[in-house]
Length: 413
Image (cartoon, rainbow, N blue to C red; front, side, top):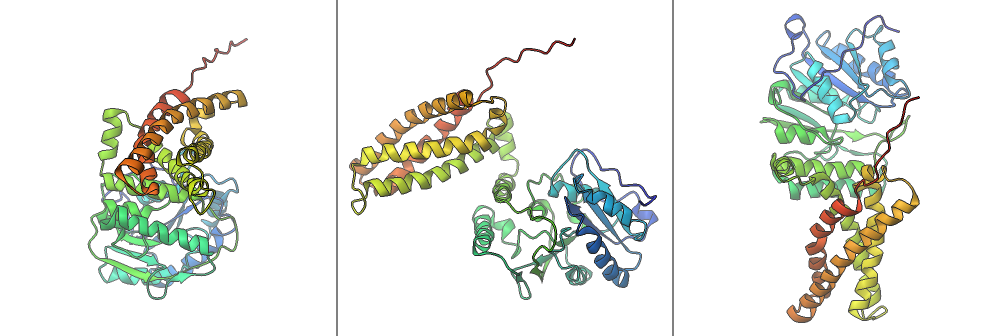
């Protein structure tokens, strides 16, 4: 184990200072942060490769900062042991705060360099591409991004589903926040360099893994350069890609789009915006189920049942789907305080009654829009669903998922 100690994780606001207190006493120009969690099998190799490259290009003018979220596989200990062999290496072990984006910012807060950067700790970002990013910074770029979607870029062995999700996320980003997402070809990249002064003293508020979105949305960035790279397949350790990343990505876009208006709404009117967004996403899954069932039951080419009967069955199927997801995710923190099947069934009955009231309104609107206004049955159904979403959310928050049991205090003996 190295005799050098780990860096103390910064506390307080997520703001990068305009100048590091240590900068005046060092020659550090580039500070590259490596956020890690369970990367003990990859971190030593990555440090070695980066050191070889940077010792040739910037001898004595760089630092590597591993920021580890107290990995169970002791990634932080492996990195700290390597400090004896790599004088440019620093290690920060976080035991309270979690998350890739905040790890990167905490690393930047402790950094000495004028140029700040980030690279994944799993060797899926080719280290040699860093040299091209440095060249772009030398040529005056404020931000240099490694991209999979420019000349020289790509992915190695991604499945069709993962490619679709990645591109779909980008398209949604362009629709929700074109002025930010549209500035680069790969807004979900986690491999880039930027000048400290473009984000210095700005209050950052990231969500999820996509720190580049936060930089683009809140930084004062002028010239942007993009460098192609091929995203490599993981050789060791487990992938951390999950559906939660895509949800956080959408929530982050909404947060940047609002520019504080969402926070104002939450604080002023007590509206739990993130919980409502989750409720809406769950409801969206229910829309597909509802629409599919309505088609199977009512379409003349299928079973051809009556519209009202078909709608009731379709809605009840969607309600069951929505309850299961809401109980586990949207209101999961509350549901965990109400353990047991009896209480779960009780929540479902409340949820169903509230949604039944919404269903009655839904059916009335559907028939009105279809039979009287003359709208297409599926468009009419979609409008009716949207009309009762807020009703369902608010009443379920207040009635279905609430802690009503009083815990008796434990008596110390």
